[in-house]
Picture 1 (tube, rainbow over the protein chains, first blue to last red):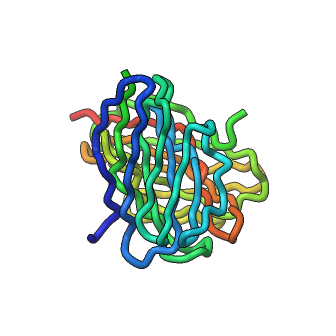
Picture 2 (cartoon, each protein chain N blue to C red; picture 1 turned 60 degrees about the vertical axis):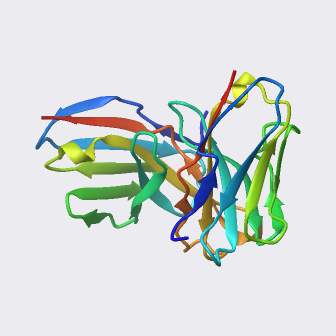
Amino acid sequence: GAGVSQSPRYKVAKRGQDVALRCDPISGHVSLFWYQQALGQGPEFLTYFQNEAQLDKSGLPSDRFFAERPEGSVSTLKIQRTQQEDSAVYLCASSLGRGTGNTIYFGEGSWLTVV
Amino acid sequence: RKEVEQDPGPFNVPEGATVAFNCTYSNSASQSFFWYRQDCRKEPKLLMSVYSSGNEDGRFTAQLNRASQYISLLIRDSKLSDSATYLCVVNSLLKGSARQLTFGSGTQLTVLP
């Protein structure tokens, strides 16, 4: 596709339920990022992939959060045993290369509400 | 203290007004600076990069003061379509030499008819 695609766009989960959020980056993009954006806040870094390698996961808030990108393209962010504080928009972004000169493109986000 | 701080606003201005947003960052090793725009329920989109010499793109002017660790965005002759949240963004290096963007909380702008 032309841009970064995320699914589902909206998800309502009951507390304790597991959720999986999918990101389809722009074709050929090496770098992939996940961000969490709470209401009224800016996006907060969660994790970064370079191809299939997860080079930084320092932003994941707890061990209930897990991300993978097994073939270096599509990525999945999984949240186990969801809590109300997990309610946020989860933004995926990708960029063509590894260097600092590459523009980052965001998907429209997956809106998660935990009830 | 947050790494990137912005005045959250909201800024409510009439059409045609000039409005300025300010931002400070704490990491003196930061290398690149940006303003992103985020419309309601949409993803952030790059508005403009910010260079040390200052740069202009139409009605938008961005300034960077590395000594004071301060970034600004000036919007002249504001339009209704400028209504959005403006995010100040700073680059920090990640492992593997890729960019990590650190976002401010955003400044909300509403341009009134």
